[in-house]
Image 1 (cartoon, rainbow, N blue to C red):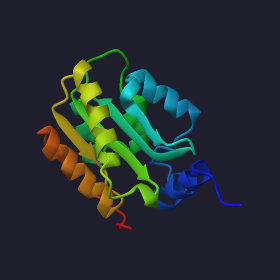
Image 2 (cartoon, helix red, strand yellow; image 1 turned 90 degrees about the vertical axis):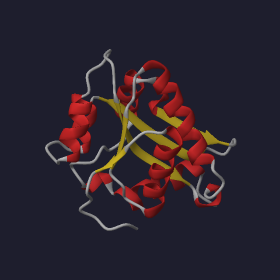
Image 3 (cartoon, helix red, strand yellow; image 1 turned 135 degrees about the horizontal axis):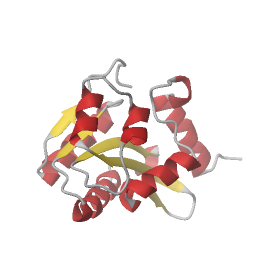
Image 4 (cartoon, rainbow, N blue to C red; image 1 turned 180 degrees about the vertical axis):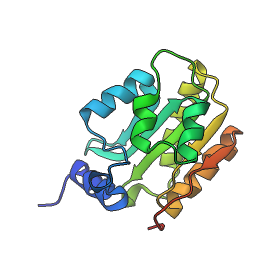
Length: 164
């Protein structure tokens, strides 16, 4: 019996991010999803065609101070979410994660989902920066493309890991 898209997505997340073994990374569960959605409903996006999620996208609207603290490694990824205040104006957007099952890659779907989410967040907040902590070459390329399309600067945290 083949794995469901949900099971495949969980395996992909663990393979790429290994968040369960890295105390600095955001380990996404139902509570984290609720926190993200409280910041903005478009923080969590997915694409599915009736067989479970094929693409998961997480974006975290936050402040420039929190962005700067993350980029200079004064705070970790978990702290981006825990330190971001509710019900305020956000000027920075963390491109947290984009996971796409292999058969959905190269079709522009991840970029479309991300752009739709960024557009929705920008309707409510004066986003002036995007930032990323890239884990893969594809994720880095997507972040670069999003920044170019949105006309926003992209800042990147130097990674302690090598690209997969």
